[in-house]
Length: 270
Image (cartoon, rainbow, N blue to C red; front, side, top):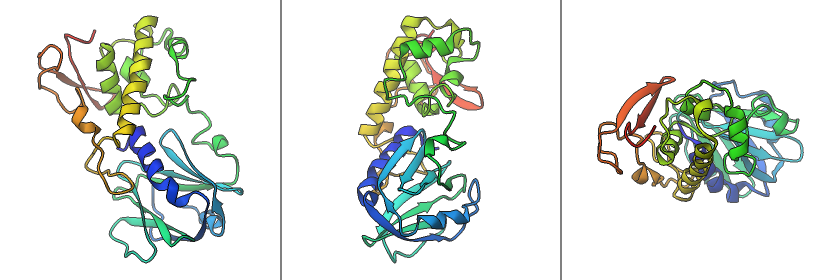
């Protein structure tokens, strides 16, 4: 599943081609995504996209009269192509632009979404109750300490709760917990304030590094210009179960927490 860095890389990739450009046509070949593509998406036609922003893993195409909300789901990707480029299998939606380009949504598993809202995007039901963005000042040690107080939930599950903080998906939760030396099954409320401060810093570092390097390459994702991400080369634990820990050489342990693969070092993380 594309995680926050991958979605941010997509935003950065498509933004120069869409910002300030008028939409001339919306072609929906197959609207059977996670939620059916609404007929109201045609209201985007003849409107100018003023900004391409991101909230959690949602991409927002903002106009003066409404916002298109895009989600890549588990296997979705976006491409900027020339109008007239033949569609291939799983190319479900094209947003054609006055500059001769189109934004194409490809989604083999159809867990992605394209929605339309006339209201402020932050008021939409999908966005209204989300936690802070991890790379903003709103996500800090004091905030995380307050949210973790008294919580018996495993710290990894806690971090992946979008009501606590958005965008810390499975890969980067594994990586940040390893960097902070915190066992992923430790109860969130039992992690000291000092260690939570370290964890916040590591989450910001890991996510920022992944964005700079183009996102993590997964089998279903390449960035908007077609180039794969490279952060996978620097993953310390994710996907390395049974291999030596880079710090102590002990084999890394792989378990399931909340149905998600979790890799950690039982010696370095406690």
